[in-house]
Amino acid sequence: MSRENERDTVIARLIANTLKKKRPDNLVQIASDIRWLENDLGSLKAVSEIIRISTHMLRQFLSVERLCPEVRQLVEERKIDLINTVHYMRSFDPEGQKTIAKEVIAGHLSANDIRVLAPLRRALPGKSIDQLISHVQGSKNIRSYIAYFSVPSGFGDEDAEALRCRFGKIVGLAEIINFGTETSVGVLELSELGQKKLKEAAKERKLSLRKLVDEIVLG
Amino acid sequence: METEEIYKIPLQDIRVSDFNVRMTSRNTDIDELTASIRKYGLLQPVILRGSYGNPPYELIVGQRRYLAHKKLRKTSIRSTFFGELDDTRAKILSLTENMHRLELNHADKAEAITALYKEHGGDDRSVAQELGLSLRTVREYIRIEEEATPEAKAALKRKDISKVDLKRVIDAAQGNPDKMNELLERMPKLSKYEKSRAVEYARDNPKAPADEIIEEGMKPRLERTIILNLPKEVSAALGKAEKELSMDAEEVAARALSEWLRDNGFLRRRV
Image (cartoon, rainbow over all chains, first blue to last red; front, side, top):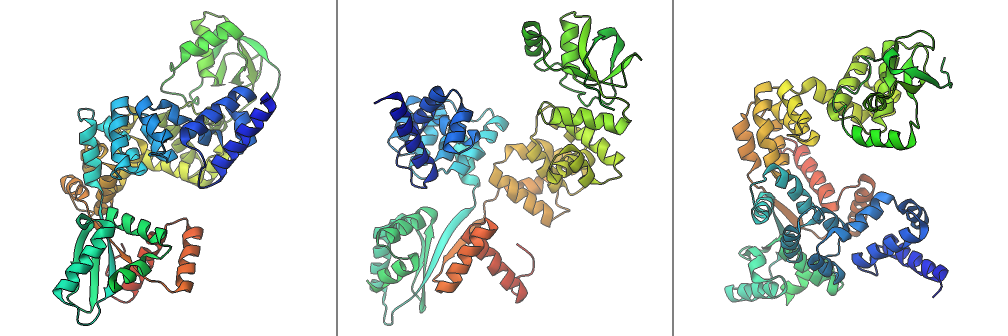
């Protein structure tokens, strides 16, 4: 492939990766494309002009270069795929990055939480990264999600238990904070992770959350 | 008034103006600048007040360039003259030149902006316009300069506290200087989530002591989200509000709900 053709391919790939919400490539590939184009065009500003995104944003993509190899591998596998997550992780040492990566993949730490971690690390230099993560996680407001549903008539204890299990199959029983069918309006209270799982299930079935809850109730 | 001519002025004929806004960190990166001047010479002349031929001259812009020349034991420096300037103009010129190159620290900027604010008779809009800064930025600086205690300003200067945290401390102290000084050390040790709860609690309870504010900030709250089935039109309107207000749907719905509950007497205070 000639240099010109290669340049066109890289530009096309970068535009596709920075304009669309669903990026076709992982962040390591994107950073490598930005670097290739920067070398080819002579500056990051030139890349910014041709791709039409700011140099500030391009630098955020390049944050991936400051990750340790193990974490970069996870980014390559798209287990970590959010630009903000990568950007906020870059300032931590390799051990810190690995610990944070584990928590991110488990769904216990958001990009915003990592952003909160950085100044806390400076304010509490004596604390380990695990202690700081626990501090951030423990300081967040506890979020729960409640869905109300109509309890069919003649609903007994066994039916209630069966329904709880049906919800549990989708969201995990541990994620159900509260469940009640004592009155004609039933209550399902879920943790943040439970709500996330229910949302994913609704998306898979192409239903709204509400509709999914009603379908599960009706069996 | 302004002349474009460049003169070689003996360093001994120049004195640093009182209106030069760079009062701290004068020697930051001076070695780098010295090396650059040694290698390439002075690319941009310094700006002096007054006109050529009437020394001593007052240096308005280019203090670090002047110091680098002294360090290099040079005897003269390339200079231009800005003509006769009143004190306010001199300060504005020095401030704008340094401000846009982002080389001043917070303390210098705050002091200079506040001085201009006073000279403009408390008109923050004029200061913002004059300096080409946003009104919000100007107000932020003025607020810190006017409301922070000397201890708080010193902590900011030492970088023991960030500007954002200091604003939180000022908010939480509710005009009480002792409380402000007590919160100075403790606020940065909280997570962002705890800080916002602490400030919220302090605003709602202006008489609460610092200990109580921190303690309340550290208590996580239970936030409940109700999954609703909305009619199509309401759902579309929510989407529109989300887009236009740059807020997520949950926040818009929570606000709408709290307003309705308050309007109908179910909720007493704004949340």
